[in-house]
Amino acid sequence: AQSVTQLGSHVSVSEGALVLLRCNYSSSVPPYLFWYVQYPNQGLQLLLKYTSAATLVKGINGFEAEFKKSETSFHLTKPSAHMSDAAEYFCAVSPPSSNTGKLIFGQGTTLQVKP
Amino acid sequence: DAGVIQSPRHEVTEMGQEVTLRCKPISGHNSLFWYRQTMMRGLELLIYFNNNVPIDDSGMPEDRFSAKMPNASFSTLKIQPSEPRDSAVYFCASSPLGLPGQETQYFGPGTRLLVL
Image 1 (cartoon, each protein chain N blue to C red):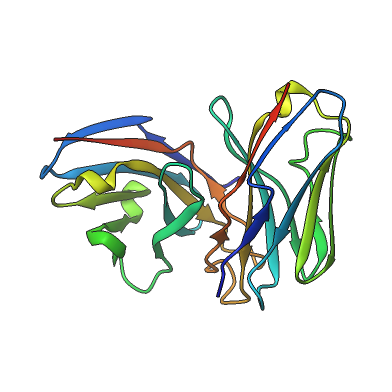
Image 2: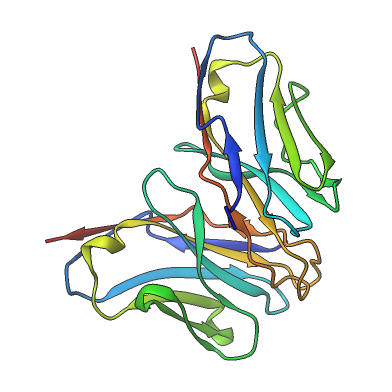
C-alpha cells in the first residue's frame, strides 16, 4: 500500500535560515507526490507537485522539492525562512493507478519560524 | 471563482443532536472529498465522490456518519447522533478532471465542530 512518512512533527528554524522538511514514500512504483501547506485556521493549499516531468519541482512562495527515487524521498526546502512560512506542511502521495484524485497524506510537520 | 464553500464555519452542539455539514465544490470539479482533522489522528479521509457517486467510504468512522452528493454542486456530511469524540475540523475538498493521479485538490476553509 502507498504511504508517506514525514520525519519530525515539529521543525523550528530562525528567520533567514534554511528550511528542510522531510518526506519519504513507500511504493514499488514511483508515485505522484505533493506538498500542501495549511496556515492557521485555513484549509490546505497546494505548494507544489511532482508528476514525473522533472525531478526538481519549484512551487509557490520560494519552496522547492526534489524527487529522489533512490532514496524514495521528496523533501521540501526553502533557502531562507520568513515569519510568514510558519504553518503546517503535509506531504501526500497519489497512487499511479488512481484516477479520482484521491491522496494519501502524511501526518504533517509544523514549521515554527523564530525571529 | 469563490473556491470551495463550507457551511457552517463553526458549529457547537450537544451530544445526541444531529449535525449537518454542507459543501459546495468549485464549479466544474468532478471529485469531492470529505476529511476530518484532529490533533490526535491528523488528517483523515472520510469519503470521496467521483461524478456524484461515492467511490470509497471506508474512512467513515461508523454508521452514525453519512454523506450524500445529490448533484454536482452540493454535498452534505451528517452525523446522527453526535458524540463528543466527533469534535474536529471537517474539510471538504474538490478536484477537477485531469491527468490521472495528478489532480490538485482544493480545500474549503473547514467547519469547526464542537460536541458538548
